[in-house]
Image 1 (cartoon, rainbow over the protein chains, first blue to last red):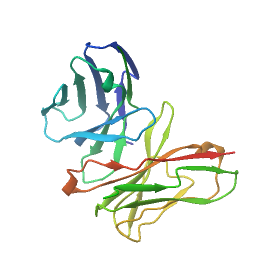
Image 2: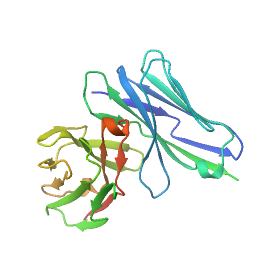
Image 3: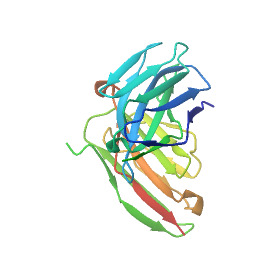
Image 4: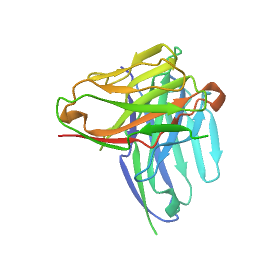
Length: 112
Length: 113
């Protein structure tokens, strides 16, 4: 079945440093979504990427979708303590299925 | 707008008991899903639905049943609880009108002893 791999599993940074998490799918995706979950909270939708090679920005966050639509990345510039949490990618396979499969997430901690 | 409402927030069950986790959304979303979250395992899809009367299995459906008789409600039934079902359960809903991003409920923390 479809698998979505995410690395690294954990990342600890000093405040102000950059952070990147990577997502790879075993199958071609129709789109990929990114979520953030704060400690003790529930996942919150950040963004969806649909087009091959797409790049989207939200303030200090940059999201990319690979040309083959099998990989994606989330980059945070100059991390802040408010960025703490677990970041998940989630992919929908091509073919019209609404089966959204999540990666295991990257837990980000930020040292002030 | 309450969004996605899950009840109960906490539950302790004995092995072999059955129960239903409730999920309701007031956003008229077509798609609804149930996920379980375990440490180090991320979010795993249990069952999902693309509309009233339509359900399908996700990655880990065994031991769980769902039904979707209305657009608003998507209950998850545990038939005979097992300690391996100890987890945090999240219900989520989505729609093309919401850009397909899922809105999650606040979760149900279930412990099976």
